[in-house]
Length: 92
Length: 334
Image 1 (cartoon, each protein chain N blue to C red):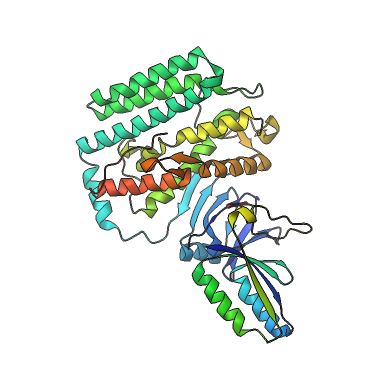
Image 2: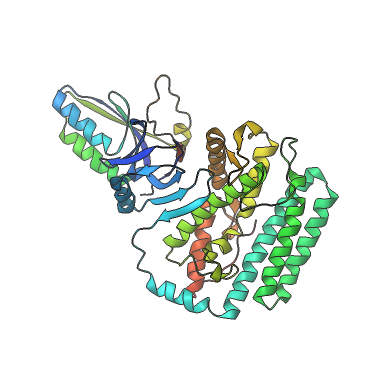
């Protein structure tokens, strides 16, 4: 399993929407073009494959994997909507 | 691919629905939380929570443990998917647990585990308290534990457990150092004061978790040894739970002594059942610390440490192995 931050920069509107829709299956949209996902290796590979097929030559998609020490140090300023909190419980 | 989250839904009147592989929790028609089903492994619905049929189907499809409690945290029941195909295991369980020698020995081990863990907790707390009352209770419980090997009848073993519990709770209040909370006697149905309410809530949450694990390993929760089968309660779960109650006790002591919980975290409703409950904020606090307690590490097999929640699963597995004749059940000793 890995905790990965996915940040993308996609020029084509339709492709950008498709990418967001695909990422919604794996994680949580924390900013306009940034998702945080907790995925297995299998899911990670599948995610990358699909996203790659939706990219144009000028586009960028970066995957930042964080270990549990680092996820514990995440700080967020501003609106906190549906955060995939690193804690293993959610109380709502 | 292990889902990692337990979700507690405490907002009264909330509606839980499923949307595109995620659960959405709505309060007053506004989405207050969204979690992917793949990330969830257990949902605890506290009080008045509505699940749409889609949400229920999503739980069943993903094997998500859905547990229902009332507003005070009292266990109501759980959603069970198709039972595991472990008929052979359950058949062996039925046969073995109808044999007196088998259940007597198993009950002996559960009680030994419980008494050992109670004693260790008392000793640990008495290190700084240096109370003679606690020291005396420790001596009494140790003596009772030693007498277990001489007891040949199941009724005698139950008797030992009952006596030891009485001694333990007679000094439980000595371990609490918060003038706002007093504990004199254990009250269960219903809990009559704050400390009893916390103990009952903690035991219920731990029970709920353990029952799920017993189902997971394919055993029948209702066929146990120490606890009476006729009572209609999941006696196997209650048997194994005895070894883990100390962790709830330790948690309650910590929350009270460190003033993490205060009288403001409780609501008193004199006519109601129960007459004392945690406020929503108090409940949230309790649940956070309860979860931390499940992550605490203890030495278990081969001198390695494991988080408590994993030890719970290991004990359930060990019981299944014991029924299959592959291993001997040994209680969890701290």
